[in-house]
Length: 204
Length: 204
Image (cartoon, rainbow over the protein chains, first blue to last red):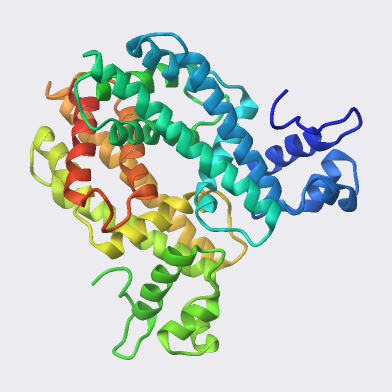
């Protein structure tokens, strides 16, 4: 059960709409995607679509919130009950342990992350925005905590853990801007390269 | 003389429009900015505005192109005629030797970099888009060349220079998403921290 599936009864089209939207936003870009194209892909009318999402923007914010939730959960799983040095390696590996759809979701998130800064006029959009913003903060604080614990344990050189967390996160998320599934570099090679960069930033 | 000032006769409002647009896009976000607000800030009518820019998108793409040009020029100045190790340090310092307006321009560029991927329907917008895309490529190749030369000279450990260049650039541009002029960390402190991270990525 994921945020993508919540409130989904057996005949709910919610998951199908989100999958279609991720596909369209990933392929055509959010601005160029017509809400009617998403409806067509799911095989429902636009009126039915509005039953689930108030607007294209509400759908985008929902996708962003779900992706942030997935990423946060992944980090918590990777770092639970392990020492900071092992936790850092596991968190880095976990950041690249993703499916083709998740790669699209991460690209969509990165392409629209600035949307989280401006309050929305619609109540439902604003709810999604606030939830997503809270997760951005939680993720930053989780990485900051991991790095801080490693420094306190003497495993990592002492630096400002929050700025270092922001730097590591900035490095990691930058991949999803250019990475294309099935491209020149396979995901494992990208993972090893970027994990190496992050480890040098933290451990050297 | 900069791209921002080109074709500017003594009574040209082009530079003033670009400055106003940077201010509005930076403050309200691009989508929320009304083209009429930009016109008001400059003190001209919307018809006069269209004399200079075909659309709000054309203006955005022009800002992005100008910012990429500035950044590329800064890199070339920093690295001209110096060895790769000194060039790397100079390029990193140069990336943070920016004014308050340039910080806004870099944030606008990063927030809309995905716009460069989709062809534009308008000829003038497409021209700006293609020029901006070419500069993105030039900047990547310039950094790749610097790192490659350093590796060839034995100054940097041998790695894939292109992927390393993308990683360093990803790290550097990530700052402009969160950095606010006059915030908690001053720009020199951010520069030193991120330059340190990049040097560890390249030299260790």
